[in-house]
Image 1 (cartoon, rainbow, N blue to C red):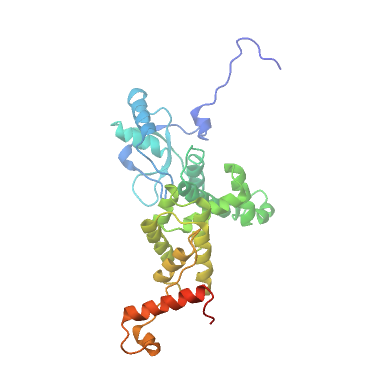
Image 2: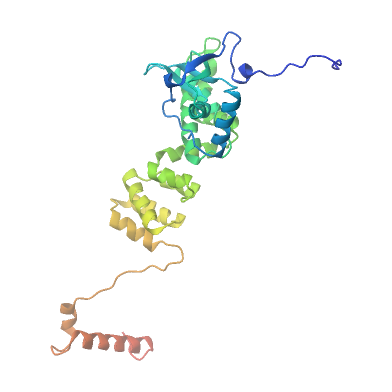
Length: 306
């Protein structure tokens, strides 16, 4: 049906954007009473965008309420959505912030927290990794609960692959990529930081995640001392780890021997006592060395057959 001139256009309110029902309304909450969401994976950074947000709040106030719930472990409230706004409001000198207080269980709170942040631009690999893991675990727990309407539909949802496929569809990643990101949560913190800094390639970081954490620490120390490593080195290391016990000196040797473009090298040495069996007693170490090199030169030229 064609709209008539002057017909009212319904605009989406912030309540609808946040999924806030008509019975919910914003109230002013003391900033000091709001605590960070437990294991919140998204970093709040004091960058240029934060400076702009602070200036906007100083001028206009906080236009969109944050979403919080009553804290179960501390006095006050737990932040669900709005960590950046809360931080900016604090920097702007505000003591209270408009907030929607919603009664939410742990899984619903986790899903809301991740969904409100996951679409941000330029997320770090570590942020995606822990956010995907938290959301997937919450989705699996929710799928496993008996449905009041149709409990028979839960069998399919209990399958982890189905849940991961659904998550992939929601966040715009492939199911396999979701799996790779979640593998990154098995990295030691120092290694994860190197992934965020792009000092370790994403695909290689996934391979490292399958290695014992103590050995990961040795890899990190090797990278810190020697610079970037290549997939060939990690592949060789993983193969050696399957064979038996790994030590740090052995790891260093494997990494050195498998540097791309470097020929395999090994140390060849003879004791003077052993060489004495083949030389007169009056020969010095230099005399023996000269004879050895002369014989090797003749062998190289085909003058001596072994």
